[in-house]
Image (tube, rainbow, N blue to C red; front, side, top):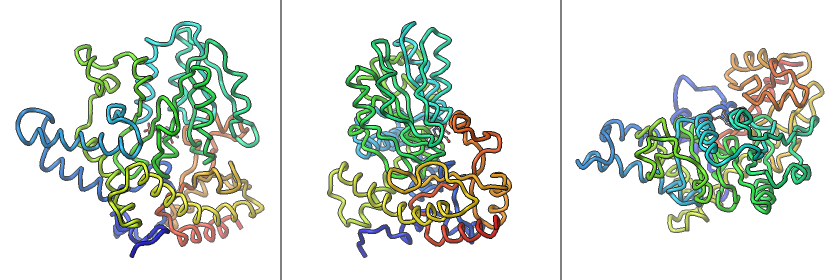
Length: 413
Ligand SMILES: Cc1ncc(COP(=O)(O)O)c(C=O)c1O
């Protein structure tokens, strides 16, 4: 049956975790930490490891096949992200990727040049760039509003000057769930000749973005939060790549895919990454019934499908949090411009104790600062105590949310 709303049974059949006996009766609310893996990724990982676990790209047929599986991942992501396949890099994680990027920028940034970072970011997209101050780069902070945690775009132009070279910011905070207006911010920066680097880790699991339309120079996300394995994806647009110095072996300087991945490629995981795109294509085909639409259109259709499914489960959760006397919701109160990553403080209860109590009842959620320590500190929240976080994705069911709200209500009554 073809339908315009997300077919949750179909979706859940793509994730082995939902038929795993040991997980029966549980509900998973820690997707921002790492999502369940779809069968398309598992199958391709398994196939690579069984059939082509050889050095790819060598002359013998198995090596050629291994290489072709890897190439296929670049090609498929190129379509889904609307960028060139040569603009895509796979690294061990986003933290490792930002580390390498910060080093690679040292050939481009000169003493006295300025960069802007935020205190809304996960530390992976902050510390490595702040450390450039040790090399004479001037680091300015685009600070959040202390009450809302939001980044006010109106404050940005005052931070720009003729020395500003780079603006680093998140697409979506992993605490607030607030979605920043990336395309608008990138426009403002581009007008002044400033490059942009965006952490999309907390966004990409909710639908892969059209990176070209966002207009950013670098876009990062982590595949283990997008139904895949533990890999970081970096999109480095061509105009930005030219600014970055080779971080790989000197004799590979001319090989684009190797310049920013000194750890070397994890062949099997790169090949398996194609499974993420295959999963999204499967969703498209199931709901729309055609495999002929252009990739760009596919992306929007699937993105909207996931978004609507998420809003449907997010709204009742936000309503419960907004109305409960003991609960303070952190971040936007309504689903508009918000990913379903929802953090709260509960009066009279420690976040870790509640996460533990919920976990005992099969409701898996997290507590802590989630490496966004600077954000919690800026908002006057004790970062060591942290927040209680529930992160949903499109496979979260309304029943999961009802079970969560009823259980939490009883626990804090
Ligand atoms: C928003 C955000 N950015 C960056 C990272 C770092 O990603 P990785 O674990 O791939 O290094 C995380 C990880 O939790 C994150 O949530």
